[in-house]
Length: 281
Image (tube, rainbow, N blue to C red; front, side):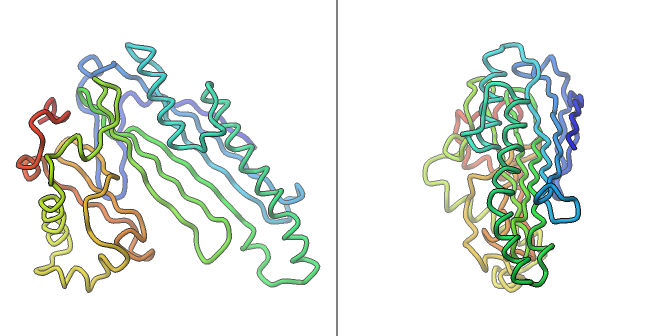
């Protein structure tokens, strides 16, 4: 069953993990005067179209620019949102058509790949057939910060395609609306910033975990799957930058993702003189 909903997101408050961002200024003061809407699409399909058999569910909430002071800005942002969220081969000019194509392809490949395997398992009387074939795919995108010339966009993905557990992850896009370009670490920080930023990340993680030493942090499970170092997966907020580490990047699955927010005050010594954040600092 398919559902379509259009919800106004002119004033948006979204909680992501443990941190909250808000768009506090009036729309007229924002670069591009962007207005947002979202498309919600949900569909469930069963193997051999039989509700008594396992099935897959796809759930999409896609946020896009509905209106902007410049149509070219809206078009470029929506293209970036779609090509980052979805497989590029399914992206079309029309947003609704793209969402429907993504859902259609997911269902097609699920049935094409799983129906013959499921049928073979039935013949072989395999155990726990149902749980291994009940797949899902969820995509949820939101604007979580929009102020002056800055926009932060979140893409959350969650899926299960058999195995011990599902997988999930969050990706952020940060955009300088005055140029229409994405913001990367190199756009914010001076050369050779890595060591200084790594020290700030460790200092904040020590504070978050109430630890006195790095060894204490490591004993809790942090850095057991990867080193703590600056990540390009970050989110610009009103008070600082949150660096986001998905599961397995620096922690095992059971610990979940790690968010480390560093204030702009702490970051000032390593920011470039011409960094794109100057309008909000």
